[in-house]
Amino acid sequence: MRLIAILAAGSVFIAMPAIAQPTDPIAAVEAQEERTSRVAQHIWDFAELGYLETRSSGLLVDELQREGFTIRAGVADIPTAFVAEWGEGGPVIGLLAEFDALPGITQSAASTRDPVDGKHAGHACGHNLFGAGSLSAAIAIRNWLDATGTPGRVRLYGTPAEEGGSGKVYMARAGLFDDADFVIDWHPADRNSAAARKSLANRSGKFRFRGVSAHAAGAPERGRSALDGVEAMNMMVNMMREHTTMDTRIHYVITSGGAAPNVVPDFAEVFYYVRHSEADEVRALWPRLEAAAKGAAMGTGTQVDWEIIHGNNPTLPLESLQMMMDEKLRQLAPIEYTAEERAWAASIRESFGDEAPPLAQSSEVEDYAVLTGYGSTDVGDVSRAVPTVSVRTATWVPGTAAHSWQAVAASGHSYGAKGTQHAAKAMILAAVELYTNPRLRERAKAEFTAARGEDYVYESLLGDRDPPLDYRR
Image (tube, rainbow, N blue to C red):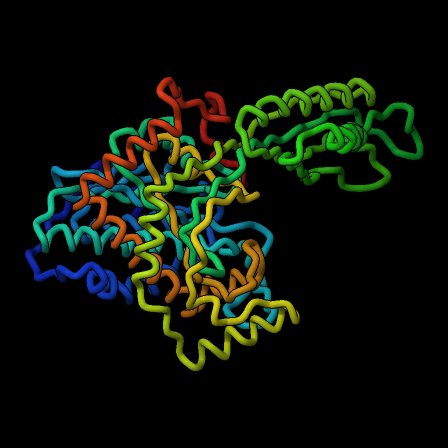
């Protein structure tokens, strides 16, 4: 496979012939429109899970090689992670590119519910668009730098396994962002926004109980149910919720609970997430989960061990950068849709009921605000390593929730590709501002230092564990 060859070769550079490039940043992105749609569609079709995104990562690397980027593949001990760079001198500006899908949800690009037989994952968070949009923006920035002779380097980080795998955390822990000056991030959404958004810190872990199997009716006294251990732990954690702070979020799913009711299960597993707006509170909550697991094992005569799977620090938004991105987003002409795309969107909207937002929302920019969201992302660890600016664009029909079949459909439709191009345009305008405005760079870096604190020392919520490359197998 192509990616394997790249990993074996290490850093690769392919010289490109000199060709005329547009000096207008927007034109530089518009020239990538075919690439954006094509790459987004291929990654949507692949729908590869975290740390298994061999074809998706390989496709992005191939596109970047053809444009003369130097490639470092397999970074941070992750086969599908990479760093691609072009340019010399000047500021180093990185872009993030995600490409993992979610398990357990599939949908065609149809505007009504249409699961795809035999397919067990889908891009319900639009990471196919994320990867394609960042790819096109990085190449457009490369072309603009080349055309204008502006000193600077553009770097694309291929970041696997955002969904529960914390790929960027391992990359941050490996120091891959330490020599970057700024990072630009974006995410698919049902609206356009450059709000300064703080996410929740998050840690997850799998608690594995082991007991003794026996015939549940013929010899129940000889059995020790691992499922009893899981259920006892869940009961204690659910009681614990009364005694946590308002920002706390705890959720779980039993991933293994036995195979037959008449067999006492000797193995059971529960997968927990703990979230809070402050990383220190997550650290304080986690030992209480461990204590509940130990107590459950003692009370049910079972054994328990656990493994931390992923952990994300909260994002660190910088208003100097977010307000700049808000300004760039407002400079863009609204997305224009075809009659077919508008009809398709109207059909999707019907699935949301009477309270769905108007379709016109996709052409508007939300008012700037400072917000705390209730999701979590490994971008948080990037934002604590390097000043980071983020934007969201309307790739989904207004009213669409992430991780839904409607999000999968839009992410595989031309409607989503147009919103992706919109994101690439906002990113290149922000990049041009950062390359050419030293006062903004100084102000943002001063805000970054103040927000982290002079004595800040990075600490991940993962500890020193290796990347869980098999967590989706």
